[in-house]
Image (cartoon, rainbow over all chains, first blue to last red; front, side, top):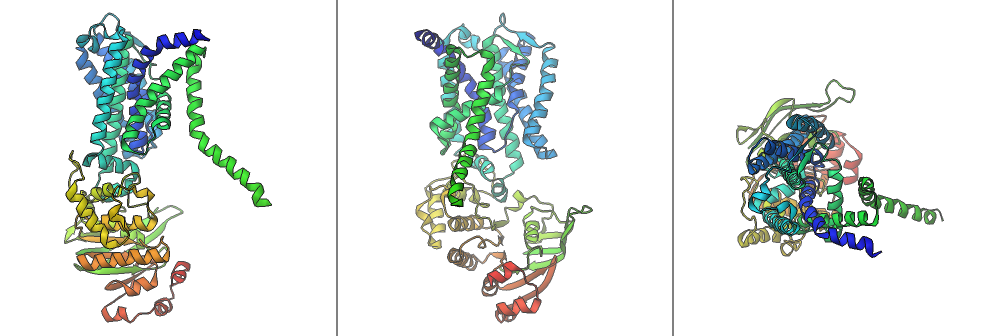
Length: 304
Length: 259
């Protein structure tokens, strides 16, 4: 009994640091799904793109900050590609995302020349300003927490400016936005691009912290991000701008602790993705299920 | 002010569901004109308004606003000149945004959005002043989300939004049709009041024959994609509902129900 609690507790700081970093993936899911009403799967491909490109560049002796910047820019471009495919060719957003993910898989292999690139012996962007950052859980928690708070404050300011109002209007009612002079296509292009830039940033950070990039590192990223977002929305709600911005961060912290607890209890790591997917399925399906149950209950009364 | 020149539109040409909506519409609105448009379902009224607003590109014909050919201008660029209210009470506002945020969005539609805060004491005072004449008490609820308002309240907000930024043309697509009769009267009164106060050029579709006769300076009947009949001045004021229905024999259920 105390055994698994002990191992959970020992892992708590590491998990917390990890969850604050993965919160950026949840943020990259929230922006298109909630703010822009543009269901976008691209993060499944832009996460490994960020990681693989950054790792390949560092391995090729590019300075880590520059490598990271290029990786983020590539994520932005890939997000724009998904949006452009949808807007220009009128292909469904989900299919557009899958097309981009598929292209990026081959691209990642091209970039790295093999399926993974180790970085253990190379310097990374974090070690340059905080020695032994990757081995220091407290340093990681401090840094990521500060960054998360900064991003939340920034978004909370941004979304209440004229520009932010335009972005929210596009997500809430694109017909209305168009009738009020908003170039909806441009907002979606930049919005989805920015979301995927954030995801690529997370991918590049993960690659440097775990010490390698792998072409398959993005698998399950979307469902994980979505699960974190849903948990966060259940905890803090989403009916104000601030709550909607907080949701991916709070949700990510909760989600990864739950996962860690599950592992401590003895859930097989290979079952985690299934458990996460089932959680998302149940959460999304529950309202419909409840509605159906209610109408079935009402039926006998109608007949009587 | 607004000139439509030989507007034609056929949907799905060459396909089994081909449908001709407009077969050459010529219509001119002088500055300050208030035109009410009627016609049975499928007469092409909404298609025509969508052509005016830029949502639908005509197959042939040109649209001029103040002498400028705007036929190729996309909706969001045309919105500088045009304020619109649709029949669907949730179409013109952004749910999840407050009344003042919706109004700010409409007020800023002619300029590029920047990183300034769109709301300050001055703008709020302006919004209050614009909402007060509606008599719905909305001026005290600026921070209420529009999706929590009733359909009539939302249409009233939509009307204020459509008129903000002094557009050249107001386009109303049966904006009272989805409201209960009493609310419809309130919103219609507010609409006509605003049109008379601002003198804005207006093109309004209605299914309500009484409204068509009571309001507007000119009446236009659209049938099978073209203008069938026009009345203005004395000719319009002498029309009666029965006469309109009888004289043209163009009756559909909605028209009869509204009468």
